[in-house]
Length: 505
Figure (cartoon, rainbow, N blue to C red):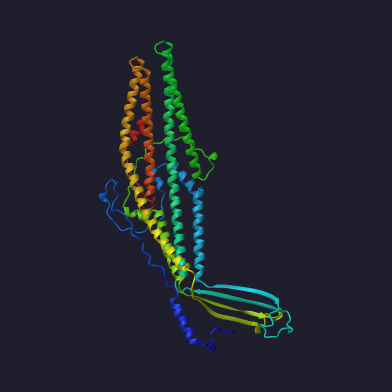
């Protein structure tokens, strides 16, 4: 037996045992700073909420891990429900995010392996001749070429004296949790993008419907003008104006068709399908009469997956400070090897061929030109960066909620005002056409009135589309919804529906 420590080397077994006991007590001590999630500037209530005084403050409790429900079902739209399910099952960006989660979990498993010893087995054969000096022979002494055979097991274990391995595991675990949160963030973004593209497509269908009826109206107007010109009641100028308005309406129709085609192609990609194989039947938009209850600002810190990801990334950076600190302290590795060694293959498995080697290996860093100091400064700076990124993410989240709350609040009144504009412009156009037939006004007045109708109708439809998209954006900004708690409350708003019907007249 080759004893690493013995009485002749000056170390007693008691001293060695005492040293080992001290080192084992130190094992697992983390050098990382105590991690506390930093405070974020969360207000007590949303400024743009309908009744901010009703939102009582509460401390945020992490609930980002709670399974989310199908929040888009609040729109009660079977077509949207189907598109969302298709996107969740086939979107390639979502699959890539899921693969990144598996990658992070594999890295976590690799880091956890450092907590356990490594064990290897080997079998080998060698042929050679050692130097005469190593064998204590004079130069020129005969020394035959020898064969050697070995079979054995080697083991190695790093005692985690100052928490290097433990902190590495903590960092990898936090990064895996960050990947999970990022997957949920990608999923929420995908769901919102599908809903936004869907409502945009339906808005364009509504605009196409308006333009189709406008073209029909322009064609009828051109026939009227041509008849009056033939009868000698008007000049050729009115005919030219009518032809110009008809051509313009047809061109504008093609513009909307082009936008619709691009929107349909974008929706196909979100669904994980080739645009050439996807088509969506025309389905004009109707008013989205849904009121979203924003809840408490503190709940936003619980629900947003991107905030959870930023917090986990910050925790990983904190753990890496401990890894950098542990590099300044000694390391201890326990090694052992045991097996069989023989000069002939036939004697390899004899009991007399057994051999083993045991012993610890301690290493103390002395000089590295400032590498460890630089690594520690880098780890601390990265942590401070992640703290700032986390707080910025929280501020952006609050901004997104406030933006969409204000959008919906203003859009509600704007749509009612625009409905009055559509109604008034329709009335003015009807009067101008009647007066033109009676010869009281010229055709330019009719053109101006009909242009105003078209602009008012398009504006009303675009406001309806903006309301639908803002509703989706608000749900997204709030972090989606859960199956056990409805994310939205529906409320009938006949005035908004009336505005939509007026826009389509």
